[in-house]
Image (tube, rainbow, N blue to C red; front, top):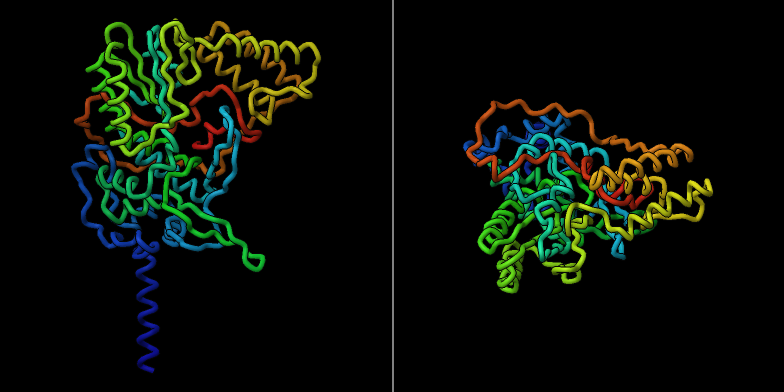
Length: 431
């Protein structure tokens, strides 16, 4: 009887502990979960963030039960459930892009982290992708009328950022080991294989945890991680007489005149920085556009003023004329989109953003077509409730505002030229 009572008492004690603490979240990720004392109050204050002392406090702030927090952050080798829905969409350049869209409960948790933590962090001025009041136009503008423009793409940008690096980012923001672990597990996913045994589907871990392309937190995390790289490239560019901007994984450098005498040396140094920052240059997406050639930056022609490629603009006008003349959209397409009307809406908005003079008439024509064909473009964010922000005391950052800008939940503000999926375009999967 005494033994039974001891077992029952131990079970109750363990149950109480689980209600207030998270002591294990899976193999190779749980070592620091007991370390709740090493937060950096000075860094948290500098970043305008509140200290979160425990998993219990975090769950309360997120307004979820401890059991749900544990479920969302648990690192499983084998599971019968997945927190992500995976699918592919076509790329403009060919091939497919794999999207890992978080399920509603995980997406809600990610939005909480985004709005209460990541959005508060100051970014480098060179960052333009998923940044408040910035766009592909602001990214292209510094390169106008340059004699040479260099476009570089970072290969597998989100997937190349693994769990330890994400955890290190949260630690550098000032959070303790335990909270940084939980945040990093929520914001990353493990590579998985789907295996079916006796009619039951299992998800088996088959690789490292990494940033998912489709999570609302991924763009903000990469922007924060890239602050050092952006600063290095800005300094290097200034030294050699170049301009530099970054839109997510697209890096652009430009220069004119005597600066081009050291072009080869400059490119070699750029490649060196990319490698030292643990990224990989995409060999098929490295372009040097020289004097006399058409120069594009994030889809915008920058030879003189921000402009749309003439050939593509002419083709779009022809598409609108055809639909207006025939009164039918049957058999017609724009880009890789499965939804022609959504693609027309997206591209006309893109033109208007780049060139409002040309864009106004095209938007009017596009809207008439959309109205005629009863197009209703409604995106419902079921997993994005109104989140009450964490209330903290205002502080003054020591970081220069001229060098850094504040990040935002700006995925919904980015405008891209085409819609590539009938339900939601890829650039809005982060919203």
